[in-house]
Length: 255
Ligand SMILES: [Zn+2]
Ligand SMILES: [Zn+2]
Image (cartoon, rainbow, N blue to C red; front, side):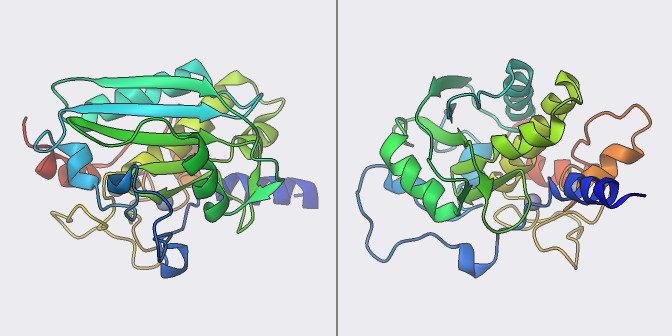
């Protein structure tokens, strides 16, 4: 394999390696800058049950904002909505808002950059019967390592859409949709408390080498889900496995 080929393979494998749960990624500020959206300033996994069940919030809105040229494909958005409809119970509905906003104006960004940007641009916050999720598709890459996205708060994530587009350039629309969908669904599942981070495991299945990820190589929550994609004979997207689904169902509240 050529060096270029090797690097491409490594980068493809890494796209879904979204490892961010260590303490150094905690974004809880010493002094909150604003009180608006205080329910949305907690750490990843801490709103898992509020997102999954209708006990506190009966409605979910997914607020998607994107930098110029970074709009996610409609199929990716539809896939994400279907994912939530499968795994959460929101009798008042699951809705989406899409809006183009500005560039974050940096080639590489930290989760702190994403958080500051969200503070300025996010419109909907969790209140009343609504739990609100915020996703920004950035025209930037991560400063930390080569990844597709990071969930950095209880109801917020950033997707490094520029990285995704660069790595699927020339590969066709289907590959871009697959990568976008894989990234946002993997991150969404972290917000729903997987694995063992806000939603308790019904049966132990956390990867001992990769905290908050599933030990099943074919699961969406495997730390590098690319491996699962390669193994699927039809090259389909990896799905949550039985253990991860069982964990979510235990807190969904209805069946
Ligand atoms: Zn992950
Ligand atoms: Zn799993």
